[in-house]
Image 1 (tube, rainbow, N blue to C red):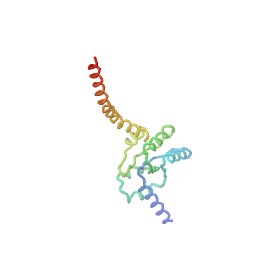
Image 2: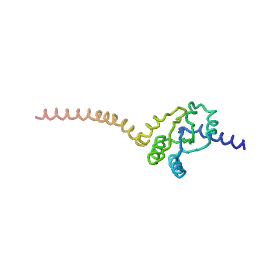
Image 3: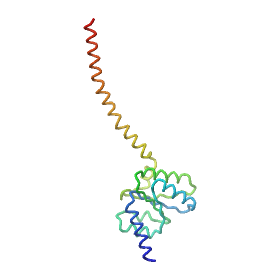
Image 4: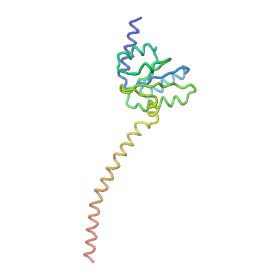
Length: 173
């Protein structure tokens, strides 16, 4: 039995190590049916929601360099592990789920690439647009000055030709 617990802790530690984004969630008072819906919402965004005993969490985090983890594991705790590309869509999905429910989940904080993320930072991430919108805005911001520069370059020869045309018209008269 003890070997099974050690294997479970090592498995959890490995999943935490490979995750780029980790969020700790308190779920006291949330119904099982709602938790199932929440798991599927997290899974759609390439994340995974795990619930294990707090002692397992603490032992799994012991070998890792994640500060302030003892403040995140209090009471019934779940952990969202994410290794995808778009953390914003994950945070928006879980915050959207939370708005719809009578008994909301309690986000305690987490880690992004080993750095501590507070609840305030999670709120800010939830308000950001998704990855595609950010990339399109970036491309528009970068391409705007380039188009203006090209327009200016094109205008110089056009004005030169216009001046030559006016000179030619004056000589003809």
